Image 1 (cartoon, rainbow, N blue to C red):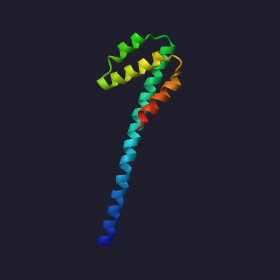
Image 2 (image 1 turned 90 degrees about the horizontal axis):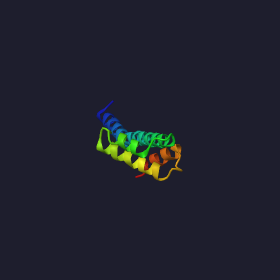
Image 3 (image 1 turned 180 degrees about the vertical axis):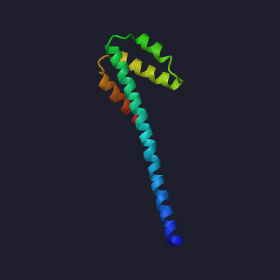
Length: 101
């Protein structure tokens, strides 16, 4: 293989890797959004089991990061504001909202 062939293969590999970077970022976002959906669903399920909003807020305030606490509080407020939102619907809304550009 000559120098030109090696350069062509290098260029092709570079373009493939360049195209894969956004896909990896999208995969990471999808995983984070799936976790947010699981959290929203768990909050709605706890609400349906009779766990009080105050108890859920207290638990959210023990989150390891401020961002996690804020996300939890947003989900709690939404779940208790509209009790007709099912756990499955809460999960879907959280996932879709997270994935939106």
